[in-house]
Image (cartoon, rainbow, N blue to C red; front, side, top):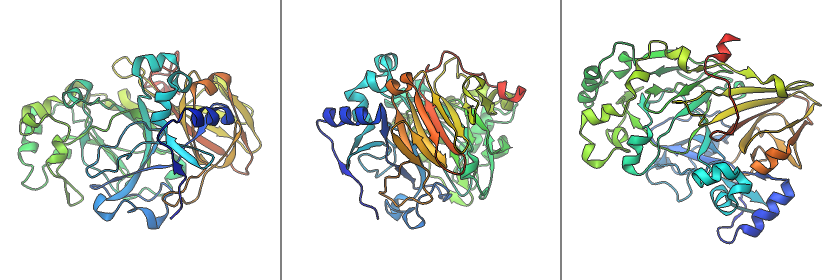
Length: 416
């Protein structure tokens, strides 16, 4: 196992200021690994094969890596800092959440800091061998009943992390138009009678590398086995509506973990958490599928910047993401309207004063140079990137709410 840098948890103002000055507003982040006891790792997120059960077999395998996260993973038996990203600087590291609390405006901009008092989004690699249960993430009004926030999310399937399909590269999404609430209720009533059959009420879509989806809160989905990049709201709420997947039983507790205790057996309430109209949408693909869109305004001369997550959810720009590709020897400067979390998925180069490189394999506890938080301050000045390698340099970066004056709308990519 690698020896990680020393954690600093008090009086971080001085070291944060030094790190910001040294990096020109760019901050190195260390890997944030998250296990899930009910899932089977897909083994494509570059973690060393010996380390997928580094948290202990009782915690389950590591199938997620979270990026620029100030959101805790709400797992049973979790570690105190599970899901939280760390900044590293000169042999020390401290939480991104603490850095945002210390220097909010400099980190994420005045508007976002004044409104949220935190970095309200995160992203992750989500990597499984097979499908996961048909589930939903609560809308804000339902999550608030357990003092949490709702969680809309988005998918993108990076080709660099999907050399194989694994077991089931299809995702059930929503419910077949015409499905009734009584049919869903019957599935819940049959929880302990074998497969409850909820996916018979749904429709599976084949997953496409280099494309993605937008998934509003309250919409059922059973992610398939492509490794997924997921920008999302800063919450970890969910409710599993499927009781058996690939022979694995899903306990009732995972259906109601984010439901008030007095509602744990209230089937009508559980079903009411679903956004029914979005689930039975007759044009679900047209309203939710995302194809990449080249941002012509900032592309050219060996640099291609693509929108991969865009659109609005219930009229709000909650998060967005782009994929930047630099050809060998190319150099460009990007100016974004706000902060972002960056992960390098191919190649090597430089970002401002910092070297960046995609590792082949990461030992648990190692701190590779592939992840960066681009502060609002750095984004406004412009960040220069250069490909110093012999293959394309590719990075994914995601943004918080209302960062851009305008984003493409869902469906614009399909028109192209």
